Image (cartoon, rainbow, N blue to C red):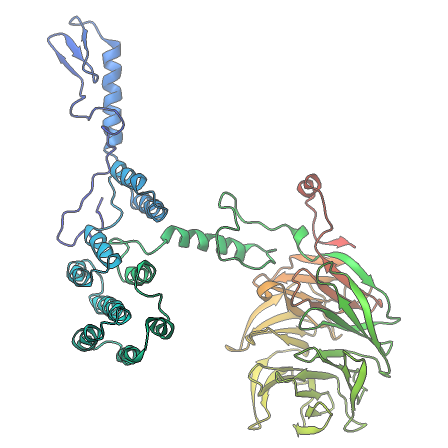
Length: 604
């Protein structure tokens, strides 16, 4: 077994034999079984009389045991076993259990870190900068990248410079800057910044401007963490390596959990390392919590507000109902009814600050309604021409403008009063979305594509091309992914940056009805869509097969909306005239929870 830094001209081969003296056992040399002049001498030093030719069972057993122990003691540790011992040793050392570490290293025959690295760390912590700089010469032979020595030296001298400044030793600090840091010819931009700290009037000002903890253990420990990153793990382990590996393992298990829908906690204190991570289906929003029946005809659209406190639903019955969401009990209560949409309401869009709500109608509707949700007043009723078809709308991120259009070739940008700011001719719009750059508008059209339109420089470009009509689409919060409902094909996920089809989700029934899907859950890890087979389908974003099929509606499910603040709350709107609110399973006692392992496909 090669110790840390092996192959660097030093004979560092370590013995991984058990230390028998520590365990109260004699060494294999001193405890060997001998038979002299008829006397059998055992490992404990006692003599047992044994006539020639007559076997001595006890002595013989001891000899076999001794041989077995000798073989066991000479067993070499594998590389992975040695790595685990070093990881445990480092963690125990961080906990202050240094005697335990010494015993572990002694019994295993391993070494936690190279002696040169240990000396270097001690000098850094003690602030002995000249000695620490000298140690770098010894470490250079053990490093894979000699250029890393320059970076390490720069970090050392930077700490030395800052400590001189804090101690008001300006001349010494200036000497370090001119005679030691500058000749390195490394990171000159940083050197200019450091030179500016000479103007700091007092120590507090220096610490604030340099974003530095000040002279002492805290800043030196932080410096040591940075320095350790340049040393090979065979010389010194990266800081808190065992915790890093455990955190990675926990995060990987969470990422692979199909039903994980809670905020990711990067710490280890909130989880048990003794069990694998697993979320139950019963924690997932696939149980009907409430059925809203106030609409008296088909419900075509539903959308939660950006702050998650309201839900707007639009219906063929010519009304928009705004519901208040209790984010604690997850119960919804009717808040306002907005009436007068003669053609029905097939699309809704909340303003970025949730003050306004825009309602659009079906294909033969040439009007658009802009409501003040707080007051219930109609601010704008817009219609450019009776021949228009305004079926889709999207808000600009600034909340002062919106775009709208339809399949008859209208594509407008307007202000809150309905005044026309810009227009694009001949674009037969099916669905719209404004990206976060406040310039680009995505529009799906009748040519089975999504194009990006820039109203400022009047340029456009093709982004997505499908082989079948795009009935609707939505975009993830980060603007990277687009979720398309494609006629006769189902739900497709596209990467807008790379312009590639990422995934086709299976199970949903999609004909030529307009069905609206959505992203949802924490980090938008999930996708939900309505379906013409009366179900709601839910997928994990990385899996093509559905993880839940929600039944309960009796006709086509036109739209789904996931609450952006409460990840366990999902709404679905259907031609059966109802809106269903889905959430986790109702409270079950421990015995029921353990015994119940049902599928999420259920009749609610």
